[in-house]
Image (tube, rainbow, N blue to C red; front, side, top):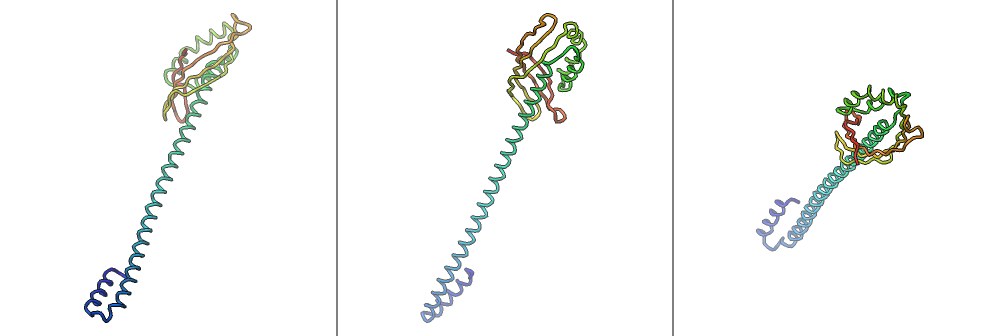
Length: 197
């Protein structure tokens, strides 16, 4: 029953006096209960709609947080893999195939580092050949000091065993390298290398 209909019945009951007031009052009470129930159902439906919208929004937000966390973790893994490979290429060389070794370094390089290494390759080739240098690198540790979607800085600790004409039995060396990386064409490339510590 609508609120307007109940009001009309109430006016009729008042104008008719006490003859029909008892049945009308019972009808009015029933109408009020029905109207109250309808209001309660509408309120419950509205509450459920609000709760559903809130839960959906929370689930969407949590889903986005998980996606972003996984994307960040994957980016960090990619950065560390590129830095480890770059450090390994940089600390591993053999005078018998230095052209291939230097090409491996350049494949993972970009920017100033690539320019500097390219400019020094001819001189290094002669020096490595003259000294019959062989260096076998091994990355011990690597950690990201900063990273965003397009650039990163990684500290790498690497060992190598170096043999040459001055040290034919080999000499152990430890390197602490700071590598700057940039994302170019979906690949992390080394743009800077510094010896630290």
